[in-house]
Structure formats: structure tokens, C-alpha cells
Amino acid sequence: MKRHTAMLGLALTVAAFAAAVSLGWLPMYPARADAASTPAAVAAVANASQGTPLQNLLSTPQARSYQQRQKFHSDARDFFRVAASLGPVERERRAQTLQSRIDGYEQARELSAGESLMLRIGLIQATVPDEARQKALVQQLAQRYRADARQREQRWAEQQQNDPRFQNYKQRERIVVEEVMAMTQIPGGVTRDEYLRQRLQAERERAYR
Image (tube, rainbow, N blue to C red; front, side, top):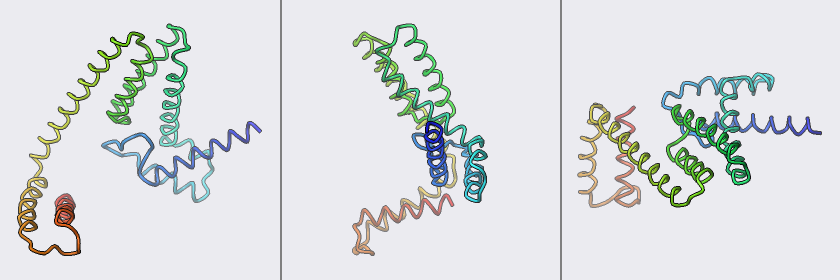
């Protein structure tokens, strides 16, 4: 019975992974910038649908990575659930392990800033008994993440300013806005704002095609 249950759970995990890959999405993780593994993952799912043994799909790097991330989240939930009942040494040991794993996933861009922030706040609350100290550490952490976000936004803005496609879009944007604002009738039975949004979306798609 236990073996049957374990195999059922394994099959459900594989099914969830296959569905996530086929949709181009993995739960709780933003797409990485390179996204190099996606074609291989899709191929693995396609092979599975054509009769490739289940074990072959489970042995792919994408499947192993997915299962490792699921275990990471499971371990994090378990730690936060039992942290208060652990001894100081064991609680600190598990907290440090979780902290290291958060660092690794964040550096690999497999955790969003928001997810990392919430996990780190949870670690503070689980390991720092003094509420005033907790509050101070959380504020410092939030300030660090805000500063990181501003730096990323600045780098992105600088990259955009040097991108000819972006410059072309901005020129078209001004023309489209003036054109739409001068219209006396809006086609399609939509509001002026909605029509403007549609036109600008089309210009963005054309610029970055």
C-alpha cells in the first residue's frame, strides 16, 4: 500500500511538472533570463507522451531541478512550522541551511525578490526572540531589497535608452498618443483609454518583433 501511495505521489509530481513545463511556467519561480532549459524540458514531456518510460522523464535535469525546488519549499514550510519547538542549536543549524539555499536560488534567479524577502523575514521571526530586534532586522532587510530594486530599475532604464528598438517605440508612442487624443470618435466601441492601450501594445510588439 505504501509503495502504491508513493508511486501515485510520484506520478502526480511528474504530471504537475509536465503541465508546468508545457505551459512555460514553474510554480513559485520566475522564468530565468536565459531560459535555456525550456526546449529540453518540452522535448522530455513530448517523449513521455509518446511512451517514454516514467523513469526517463524523472531522470531529466529539468525534472530533478523541479523536484529539488519542491523539496526546498517543503523543507522551508516544515522549518517554520516546528521552529519554536526546536532546541537553539538545531534551530540555528536548520536556519543556516535554509539561508544558504535561499542565497543559492536567489543568485540563480530561481526565486523572485519578493519570495526571497518573505522567506528571510520568516527566518528572522523564527530565530530572533526579541521583537524589537526582529523589527530592526526586518527594516534593514526591506531597505536592502528596496535599494537592490532601484539599482535594477536604473540598469534596466540605461539599457533601454541604448536600445534602438526602444527609441523607435518612444517616437511612435508620441505620435500614437497625439493621434488618439485628437480623435472625435473611437473605433471598436471601446473607451479612448482602452483604444490607446491597444494601439500602444501593438506598437510595442512591432518594435520588438
